[in-house]
Structures are given as structure tokens and as C-alpha cells.
Length: 157
Length: 336
Ligand code: SF4
Ligand code: SF4
Image 1 (cartoon, each protein chain N blue to C red):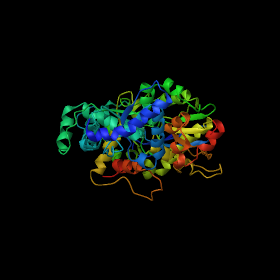
Image 2: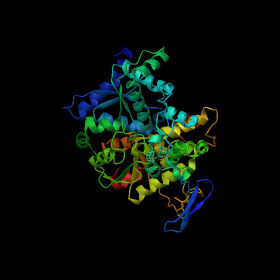
Image 3: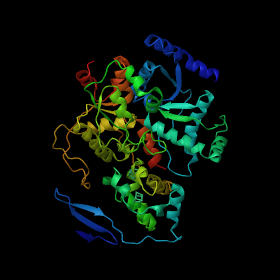
Image 4: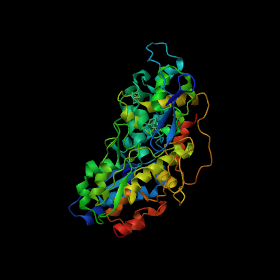
């Protein structure tokens, strides 16, 4: 069952056998725009990442293999799609901040898109404005420095 | 080679030669390899290094710590305009160059990945290298060409598993070991030590040591990495999936090559309370809203298992820092 929840977003309800479960999902119906007039932020993402976001043909393989989707509001393929559409909602998505640069998507994309680089570029657009993606909480004892340095490098300006 | 470097390598290399001589008179090797420890191996993962040295001595090699090494940067920058992030790795390559060496051995998977990617990045573009050299005007220029290796590659490709098997003193018969690769040994493909989806480097090593390798679908999936400080719930979800899968397949131990994987696997598996009625995952997540069972599996570094099989005594195995003591299960399956 699918119901519209605003704009082009659909809420799809599926029965997965262990009781009906709600899967929030945004299914867009636009066709791929072929033009050189993308908004600035899309060009900036392409520059920073060195990736062509229009190479993505929405197969969904990146989303299928990403181990972090349970914490994401947009699946990796959806992030790519919104970039193709120049949709600014991608800039306020939580997904780049949950991405752990694990590269599971990168090794599997049949179009050779390095999605992790796109995620990093989206973070950098925000971080370079001086905003942070990390609020320090209490650090559990024994956390190795590599976790602290890694988080600081990826998630803070 | 500079005098400093010679003085650095000489005393312990002779020790290795002596050791090799009384282990096997036919072996006249005295291989001293420049080795990059990284910060975690001097702190939370001391056993990883201790056991590596013990194992390598028994194989006739010496891991000679790189003089004046500095942090590798931990995570590789994925941005195209971030040349600064390559300065730290390149400084280390200059140290290798000063020794007159071409290779740098790493143990920590994160150091391996960051250094190896950086070595590739700067060597594929002379202009980049020139800009970095110009920036570090207090250092001699880096000429390129340093090869970053992971110890597993050295064991597999240079020493060879048959050679290792011949030196096993405590075969691991009856022990079920689940290798956990995580991300940094395998991805991206250009720097991976094995097939990113179906690696078998560790499986084969453990089989040559006499153990049974337990395959698990999550062995190449991320443990949560540094998200453990930003989004600990997600890291926890990852770990419970990884540990649960290995446990259900009967693993006695999980073996890693990364101090952050080890921390995550240890810390989050122990966060599950004793009763099985517990439910994991945040409320908005449907995927993991299943009861979780508490599994408590020792997490070891591959060097510890290797050193153990090669007969290294307890004090050289560095088990003190393990959150779950591996000694009972090792004693039970293999015998002290
Ligand atoms: S795997 Fe590649 S082509 Fe497929 S949806 Fe993801 S980015 Fe697009
Ligand atoms: S790199 Fe990021 S987006 Fe890609 S699979 Fe890993 S967590 Fe998901």
C-alpha cells in the first residue's frame, strides 16, 4: 500500500511476514534532468567529491548494501537522486552524518560512483560554514584515539 | 642508510639472528622491516604489537619501529581539495626513505588504509607531490615509491602459509575462529589486500594454524567505526549483528586487525544485559527490533592467535587488555 505524504514522497506499507511494518520511503517520479544548469551546491558537491552524480542510474545497490540505513532519513541512492534533481532537501539530510565512510557502496556501484565521496562533500558544505555534525557526549572509558580523531576529522569543521 | 637508522635496527636484528639460529640453523635470515605502529598500538592495543613482534621473531623477521613516526591521520580524506591531509602520511614516508628502505609494514587496518591510499594518491600525480614537498620545506623532499604493506600481506605473500605451518608449535585443532575484516583491509579495491566481498586471507592463515575458520556474512561489514562516539546506538546495532552472526555459527573467537573494530566489538557486545528479553535498535528502526541474545566472545588480534600457535609464551601474547579473556577457551580447545 502506498500513500502520498507531501510533495513526491510516498509512504509505502509492506507486509514483511512478521506483521505489517511502516517503511518511510521517498519515491520520486521525476525523470532525469539533462541540463547544464544545476544549482551551485550540486556543482560544488561534484567538485569536492570529484564524482559525477548524474552517472548514477538508481539501481539501488548502494542502498541495499549500506549497513547504516537504519539511521538514515535518505538512502544513499536517494541522496544521489536528490542531487540529480537539485533538490536542496539533501543538504539537511541526516544521512551524510550517519555514513561511516565504510565504502561498502563504493566497491559495489556498477557505475563507479564513489558515494562515500559524495557523502563527504555534503558534510564539507556544512562543515565549511563552521557548523558541526558532532555534539560530544560523555566519552566511554577506553575509546581508542582513532575513534576520536576519526569522528573529529569527519564530523567537525 | 643513516647511522641513526643503523643504530636503531642493529641491536635487535642481531637478537633475531640469534633466535633464528637456535630455532633453525639452516635459516640465516635477518630481515629487519620498517614498521609503523600508530597510536592505538602504543595504548589500547599493546597486545597487537607485542604478539606481532613475538610471532615475527619466530618467523625470522624483525619489526623495526620507524624512527620519529607521526600519526597517519587516522581517516583518509575523501575530498579532492584537501592536500593538507597528505602531509602526515608523507612525513612518515620520508622517514622510510631516510632509512634507505622502500617498504613500510603496518598492523592497524586504519593506518594501513590511510597510509596506503595516501602513498597512491601522491605518487600518481607529480604536481601534488611537488606541492606537498614545497609545503614541508623543513623536510627533505619525498621522492615517492614507498610501498605500504599490511602484515597479513607479508605473511601470505612473502613468508608463505606453508612456512608458517611448519613452525606451528601449538596447532589450533578444534578451535573455531571467525575472521572479521571490517572495511579498511578491503576497501577501496585499489588498496584492499583481498577480494572486497569474499576475502580469504585470514581464513587460510587460521586453517594453516590448525583452526577451523567460521564464515560469517558480516565479516566485511563496518563495525560502526568512529560513529561509536557520534551515534553509539548505530555502532551497537552493527556490532550485535556481527557478533550474533559469528556466535550463531559456533565461533569461539573473533579475530580482527583493527583496534577500533576490537573496541567496538568488545564494548557493544558487553552492553547487552544478561536476559534475552532485551530489544535493540532505536524506536524508529524496524530492522533490528528483534530480541537480542547476549553473546560474549573474546576478540583477538590476528597476531595474538598467530603468536599463540607459534608457541609464544603467555607474556608475549598481550592478552591482558582483552575485555573478554580468551585464555579459558584457548585452554579448553587447544590446551594451554
Ligand atoms: S549503486 Fe551507484 S548507480 Fe546504483 S543507485 Fe547507488 S550510486 Fe546509483
Ligand atoms: S560509505 Fe556511507 S553510504 Fe556508503 S555504505 Fe558505507 S555508510 Fe553507507
